[in-house]
Image (cartoon, rainbow, N blue to C red; front, side):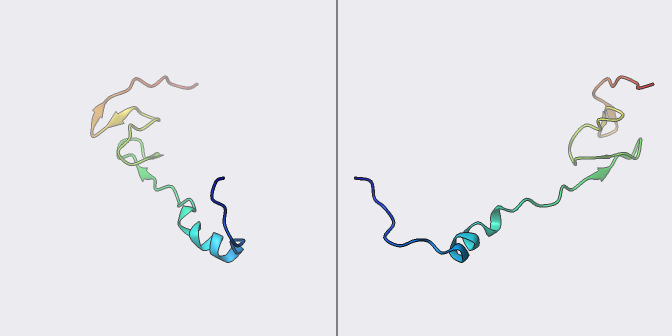
Length: 62
């Protein structure tokens, strides 16, 4: 037989254990070239630049 808990876990104890699982705010930085927000250390999805270099070719929207 698998081991089973002897007592029911209280909601307060369960919620305290899960307190660190909450999602945090997403931190965005401004692109120095086009001034759009993007994730830090990622290529800008608007202009395709990273660290001052063109990395990705981005299609222009009309």
